[in-house]
Length: 164
Image 1 (cartoon, rainbow, N blue to C red):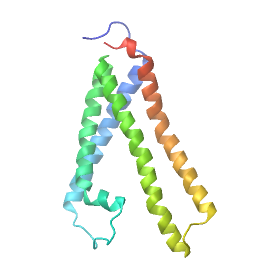
Image 2 (image 1 turned 60 degrees about the vertical axis):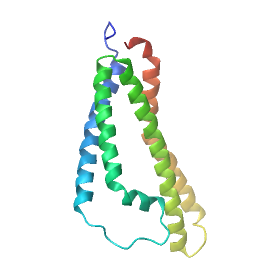
Image 3 (image 1 turned 45 degrees about the horizontal axis):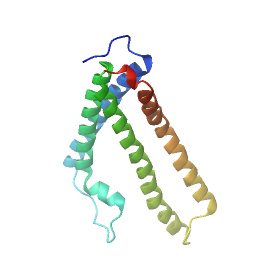
Image 4 (image 1 turned 180 degrees about the horizontal axis):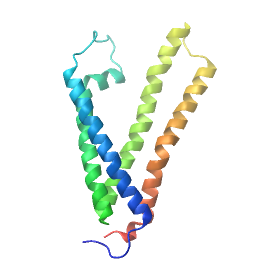
């Protein structure tokens, strides 16, 4: 059942944005899965696996998951353009997962990088300047990727009465 009336501009922008992101996600995930299945594993396994090692061991699975999320996002974007309420809910859920993914990815990146910096400087801790720079980079990354996701969630919540 479609809602009556003109479609708000924010809904159109979010719906088309979701479709564009979905196409990019699906294509890049499919290409990553193809490349990872075609390339042999290089190097020996580490003695103490880290979160990054887990990602590389299961890379094809992550790429396939990206394809699935991209396809779902594309269908939800089309549903949102048709003013279907469930499309907004799915896009909000994917945006929340994206926020968790970016914050978690940044935390894993910092957890992996700080010990490497310590080892390269010959101390137990990296310098204060490096730590501040890394934290500033993490905050910038979270704001850069998180702001569009938060705006998407905000505008969909604000206009939920307009959806059928």
